[in-house]
Every structure is written in structure tokens, then in C-alpha cells.
Image (cartoon, rainbow, N blue to C red; front, side):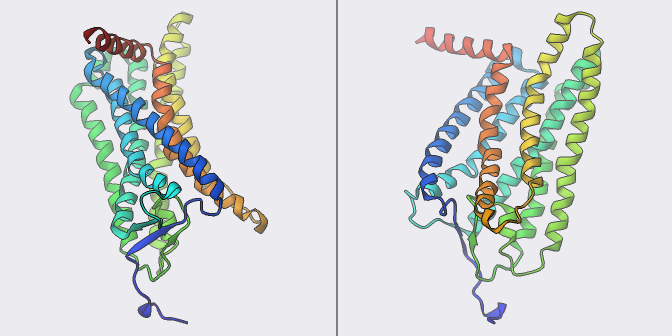
Length: 322
């Protein structure tokens, strides 16, 4: 057996993509490209609206603008590479440098962790607005909600620095084939020729912090929110109160539902089903990384009268000033 010391270290990785399903690659290339364009357009419009319309300069829309910017950053960190892998029009070999892979791992993990924290912060904002409306201007002052957003980005970035550093410090002794569409940390860890128990433990702790704790916090917040809404005497008041948080709740269900399904999906024990399992292991993260950011602006724009009115005003202003 060749020793580790005699094996060349890895300087680049080969991404398999959907090479086992060549007929699907072209179809997914078109679908992902269209979804990416919708992500850029939809989230870009939301950012423009929340920045340019003065009556939307509130904590809720400030967080929404952050979420839209985060979704653009998250998809941009991986989708262009995925499109290149699926089509191969820029490089015939589906490769990525070691440093490029590390950068993609950092960005994707940072954006995902930041979104986990940001969604829980948005739940707190809705809790204060509905359960303590008189104290809302004091509790959610500008300095407070800006600090909360900055903290979300900082915590997500710090967690990503830890995990990316632990991963790139591992020795990779020759096997550089990543059976995935992008440089996903768990897929890269499988290639390491050293003990990864520290990485596994730290990943488990991170899952508790960024998945378990926010879900628990959001659940408790919405228990109080729903209890408060049910005590509102008028049906119109209950409908109006629920409409202010229904979009956020929908996004939370889609986001965390996909994450939990991705991490808790049982592995097939049937060797004949290994190919289906391999395909689903790639498509589920793809749904999480592309479909969810595409749905976010659609959900918020369709279920929010203020956003729809602001978009119409901006379009009308642009049309009549030309």
C-alpha cells in the first residue's frame, strides 16, 4: 500500500456534478439559470424597494433587505460554478482550485449560518410588533435592529471561519474527486486522509446552535404571537396581525424544512438504490440553495401589500419620467 507521505497533496478538486446523469445536466442547466435570473431580479427589486421607499424604512423591511442581499450572495457563491459544471462551456474539465474550493465553502457556510440567525431575529421583531406594540419603537430602535443585523452576519461569518479553517488544514492525499455539484464541506471532508472526528463534533455542535436553537426560539415566539392574535376581538384585526408575519413564517417553514430533510434523510441500505440516493443527495442541497432564495421574494411580494404598492409606484415613476 502506498504511504501517505508518498502521495502528492491535492492542489485542485474535480467536481463530478451530475456526470452519472448526462441527460439531466442540460435540463438542470436551463432550469438553474432561469431560477438564478429570477433570484437576482426578485431580490434585487426587494432591496431597491426597501432602500428607496421611505415608509419602508422600518426594522421588518430592513431585515427583509438583508435577507434578499444574503440570498443573492449565497447563490452567487455557488450557482455560476454549478452552471459551468453542468454545461462545461468555460472549462472542459470540471475542476476548481483548492483555494477556490475553500472560498466557496466559506461563503456558502457563512451565508447559510447567517440566514439561520437572521430568520430568528426577524421572528423576534414580529414578536415585539404584535405582542408589545406600544414598546416596539423603543425596543426595536434603529441602533438595536442595525446591531442585530450586523451580529447575524458576524456570527455566521465567524462560524464559517472556524469550519473552513478546520477543513482546509486537513491533509488531502490524492483523492480529489468531489461527488457533488459544488464544494460542500461534508463532501470535502470525505476526501481527507486523516481523522475528522473534531470536524464531525464541531459540525454537530454548530447544527445545534444554528438549527436547533433558532427553530426553538422561532417556535416559542410564534406560540406567543398566535396566542396574542387569537385574543384580538375583531376578525379584521386578527387577519391584519397575522398577515404581518405569515410571509416570514412561510419562509421559515420552507428554509428549515429543507434543511432538516437534508440532514435527517435516511440513507438507503439497498445497493440497487444507491444511484437514486446519490442523485437526491445532490438535488436536495440544490433545492435549498437555489429554489428557496427564489421563493423568498415571491412570498414576500405576494403576501405583502406595502411591498406590492411600493413596486407599482417605482415602476410607474420610472415609466412616467421617461
